[in-house]
Length: 190
Image (cartoon, rainbow, N blue to C red; front, side, top):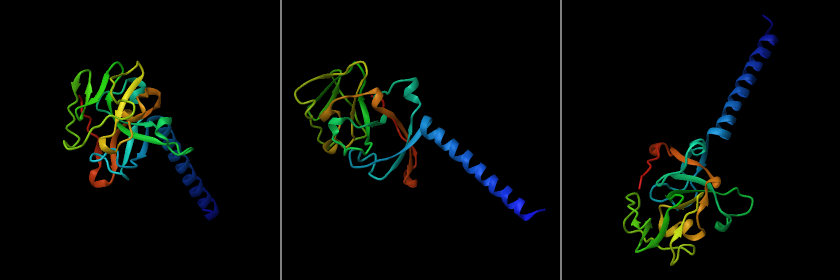
């Protein structure tokens, strides 16, 4: 057998494998799921800066976010992300369309009931932000109230208001780095 023909056949097989692999990756990345890195301290103690999560981009095309979901979304202009960075945030959904939200008595109140949040330490101070100070916020038909778990250090809907469903990239469903914390992300239903 001709060694040159054998080498070119091997090379073509490798190129074909790489092209197919990259095509599958691209389709999955664009349409089904996407990796995101947690940046900052807004989700401590449940997520640390530098951790990586997979975001499901399909679920919310067929359904709506629910209270307790951890979502990744495009940061609103009021969050003042550096221009051109494509800044995405990771936060927890606390209010869904039609809910009334109030921040008082060191707690978040939804529809007149204090939200039970076992995933945040009891000693965290929960203050209203500029958007929720001295008012009850009623969410519109396409609005979601999101907050970081680290309430004293989170820039969230308390400061800049609700986000729309169209801003949501998807639901964070699996933490894959660091390996010792790898696993599905628990959703708390309120």
